[in-house]
Length: 179
Image (cartoon, rainbow, N blue to C red):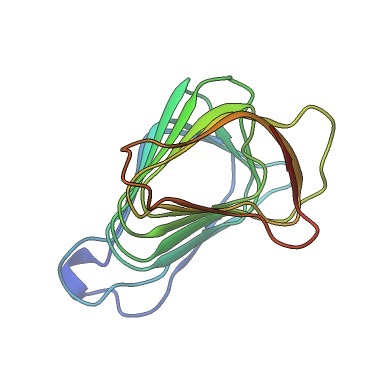
């Protein structure tokens, strides 16, 4: 599924209403030509969900997905090259890997029970914490930044995956990470 500005012909910021459950192998926002537009995906029916099988890419713009997103793959990739993507209600129970690539920002509410690999910025939004929420490993590349939010998590390891020593993990006042 691709949402872009159609070579610059779309000039407003569209809102898409998802009227039934959907599954996407790849979800792509924006392109590198014309002015970026910002997409919002809202629910068009109660209980509507989006399942992402493989990858979400964003090349421009700032996008908001307001429907629950399930990361169904054991290896999910988020390549945010420009701008930002917010997944307000994400979930993952696959115990796999979530890799955030690119210089843009990915903000999520609820991805846990995964190994996290981050380049660019990854933000875990504040949400109600339940028992046994784990990041099995938090691995930060180069100048990557992980913002943990005001949550309580457990992790087995923290690492600067490319040995540059520049990776940052921010834990705000009220946030707790046990390792």
